[in-house]
Image (cartoon, rainbow, N blue to C red; front, side, top):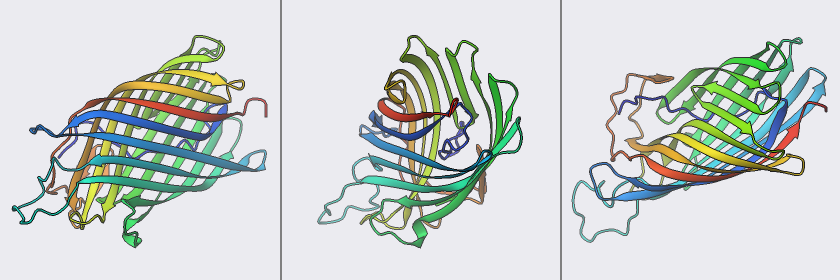
Amino acid sequence: MKRLLLLLFFIPTLAFSQNYIDLFKIGYSQNFNNKFEGTDSATSINSIDVDLTVPFKINENNAIVTGVLFSKNNLDLYPELEFYPFEPDPLPDFSSNVSLYNTILKLGLATNFNEKWSGTFVVLPKLASDYQDLSGDDFYIGGVALLKFQKNENIRYKVGWYAMEQAFGVFTTPVIGFYYSSPDKKLEMDVSLPVSLDANYKIGKNTKVGFNYYAIGRSFEIHKKYLQDRYVDYSALEFTGYFEYGFMENTVLLRLKAGLASNNAEVYATNDKIDFRISAFDIGDDRTQLNTDLSSSLFAKVEAVYRFDLSDK
């Protein structure tokens, strides 16, 4: 199914576009009542996301970037027993509920070329499937390169390119955006289109309110019994408002989020692929979807962040 909006793989926050770095982030979200279109069936989607970044300083202008990204999404792929082409007798003990795991290692270099220009270049090996029978087919490789230009102390521009092998083929996209902090440090914007947009405003010493847009696109090989030789092309668009409170001089942040998410988990045969995907455009997509699309739903998320201030260290 062609998408009208771009649904991207998560590009990790590897570029230190701000005057801080989020060393650790963990979040849990719950999507409520995602209905299978044209049916009375529905599924809930439970998700866990963990992001660890560990930079090692080489000298004043260079640092090695390491870390790991982990996610888990639990949901039903089919409305009841839709996938059966016949009525088996006896009916097997089957559930289309799956847990989709995604683990990415980060290894790269962050460097300052001069006072205005800096860059981050990272290799991203990935293991993505239901983790029931791991093999080389679940392993993928990708990378991201970002350049940043510091216009002045309040605004920094960034541009880059991301590419990753996926279960459906190769995905790649440009990334363009900026980071802005107002002179009074109350308004903050961090934009990396078409992946994410965050805008927040400080209403107290330790409190902020904000808006967040986030695009996710992932793929997973499935090895579960009755679902072998299939993969999931998973995507989501999230629009949230949030409240943030800081602890320990704002080094530990707690965010409460709520909003609307458009999720989909399209199932395809393992050998049913596309030629190429660049941003929103699929080239050579003649795939046959094996399940039913999901509708949008409300969702809530709680998120905790450990932040390290770079401004005076």
